[in-house]
Image (tube, rainbow over all chains, first blue to last red; front, side, top):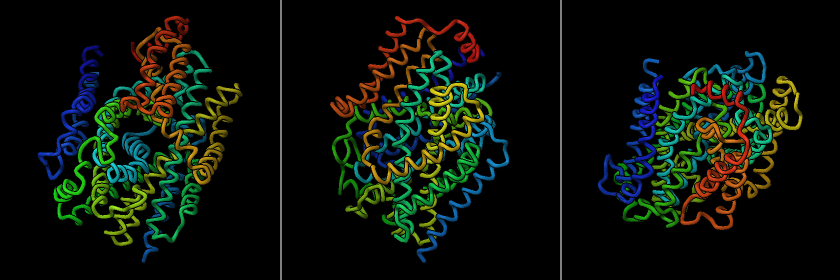
Length: 67
Length: 483
């Protein structure tokens, strides 16, 4: 396996933790606007529960394709 | 009519016990079979076995309790139900690959082999056991709350706990990890269904979820942002706790062993990749905590929010289903922790500690009997000395995260030595204890982060001053991970 592909998968897998940890100061104070009936900060977390696995699936494909 | 709920709960418990026994009894008993199901589990089993073991009484009761008491700070849990699987995706494949190549069955096995030190193996095992114990207690106490409320008081807490954990001990003894994994497929599905059934509570009570949150905005706006209703969970707390749980999650000894049981490393990776979708079960539970704030403002204990809401809004049969779901969450995790603790003791304290030369078969039998001992001990401590374990729980997460430097260096840094990793764990754990009990969370930063801040430099410094493992060991280890 070429190193670059492993590294790319690694970076994609790190998107969620980096954005969620360092984006928190921007997102957590926001209650408005409500999205899907939820305060914005709660909607943000729900969104990541759904988007997170999509990113990891991409990382999985990058990492395992052509092996 | 209330008896219906009780029948459903215990009917479910009996079915789970039978499934676990059936799954395990057909296989030939051996150390590898009983501890890691002969490294043979397929994707579906691994996925639900992980889900059921990870999501516990805390998920089913505690999340709602936190939302009720503190509000928005509990969003950190929803966040780490995403981020912890990113780290899991990156490490579990190495766990699985190395375990397959070198026959590891526990987390300390890796430390012992990679750093050529049985003392380090014993240290990691001892520390792991100490920090798993309070989690077993949490599951036991959670089981009590769930069954007592779901049975409309017909069954008291202690009886409920005893019946549940006798079943667990029997099926662990016979079925081993394969039995647990298969019964956890059932538990995992039921937990998910029961959690989503709870979504109807806020909708029925307020017409819509938005309406519920609008009312919270007028009644208690502090519930919707940091630092939360009690004013103690600032943004530093959120960020450091999220960072800590993200890094620390895959340092828990029982979860490391679970990664060993997957048939291939790709199964372990895919399980992590898709686990956040299962984590959606936490979402309705959090909403129920918020709705309970409006519906039952004087509720006590707060952890009863889910069960009390169910009893208020659902007929007994459905309360039974929710109760069975909660019991499933508590028992699947409790059983896994008991089994993992028994294996750590028999493998790393006995076979590779003070009774070297014990055969694998004797070790496996020891682990089997230790499940009984560990269950009895945990029940005894939970019922008679609940306060004792509270202190351990406070440092548990921060404590296991001290295995991080040793784990990361194992894969990335050839120069790391047993002395370095050992010293790092000792100093890191001491700092955790100090920043928990003497100066609690300085600057609202989690004690585990302070522990790591001491652990990493100590591990690096001491490693550079001491002799690395033998060239042969490093060669075979890094050849196995493909570097």
